Image: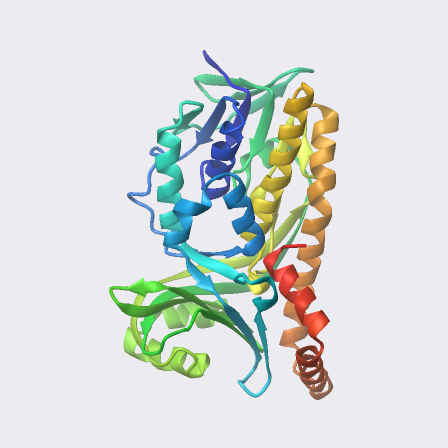
Length: 393
């Protein structure tokens, strides 16, 4: 059986896994990426979703030297309007006090293309495709990932293999999970009005509807929608001809971006959340969706994965400067301590927010209206909410 030696092994070559490989290779480590897909490219990539990058994530990308190339692919978010049912009851956020944006929107495929091109030119990164993990072995100094024909021997293993992590399954790491019994409809579309770099989030009784501004598509104003609703209803919408679907969407978006001209893409994704009870095993740490996933109501799940990576990056840099081996017990526990509480907090916050905005009792509706009105008049609280959304201190 062929043996491959590396300093750090990463299971999963999606966005989080590939960005992790790129930034850790900059510290001088030899990194392997194990990817079950047969090709490491975007040619057959069908996911048309966008990513909302927080200001905190942008700061990290700037730190590792990625932001200068990314920013031309991004549409910045200058304002966010949060609307409870209709435009008469809304909150508006901006970040004028920090002289920066609230966030940035980029297409998944655009970011993947940029990262994959950089990885192909990086001599410290070896990508192994079409690999299926059969077993994980370890001793006091190394961890060994086994497939049918290859053993990858490393100091540290990073699980970046998504919600249904094979690594988590092999280790039998316990986790909490919640199925919301709903789906999210994701659309990209062109529209008649300039979005003016503003994101909107409507809270309806069956779930939130977010409008995220995008860069222009062939000189047309462009945005994406993420709409949470009952699975049956969204399946019904997906089957409608676009003319009828546009009529429904125009009603729900309340003319915030004008009329919808053309639907470019539409997809449905199941809505669920999970949280590992711990973020490490023997010489292994979980990152991104392999560790946690959340209700999309706050749009922060992916950014928290990058926050995991930021903390991991700083821990690895510290251990390297001190000449201490990666992957030992104290290393893994430090990673756990840096990341678990943030994930637990976001898991609870997003779950409770979803419950609150779905309630229909008159008293609760009045309480929500009172709360939004008071937040609008309480600048310090608005700033704290804004900082939470941007994940900055």
